[in-house]
Image 1: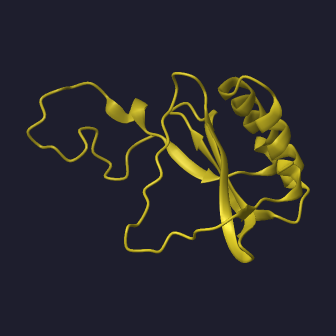
Image 2 (image 1 turned 90 degrees about the horizontal axis):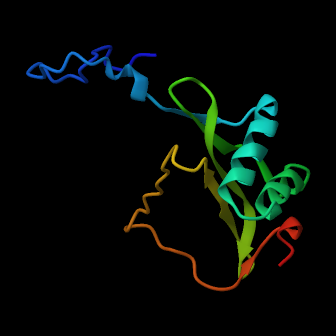
Length: 134
């Protein structure tokens, strides 16, 4: 894999390090049906119990599932190393998205969510989809 610039030194023309840095390229993409087992493995490795992995499996068959909003991260070698899921929920009757679970293989990846401070954050009681069991 190469980075999007095509430059092994990530655009730094003064970089004298000859190490090939393309081995650190990560890719995120929507989950496909072929990823289900890998997503389950990531969630099983990330949490102490199988509850989150079971939750993802249950949400896939629930009306709260939004195709294209279950994301995976692939490590440099192409294997799934992280997973983040957005599903429908409600906050005091207002449609919203729930971000859960977010999982990475231990010592493999880090995921970050940047919140836009200019956007209002809904407040109130969250109504989770039935598979959450809440």
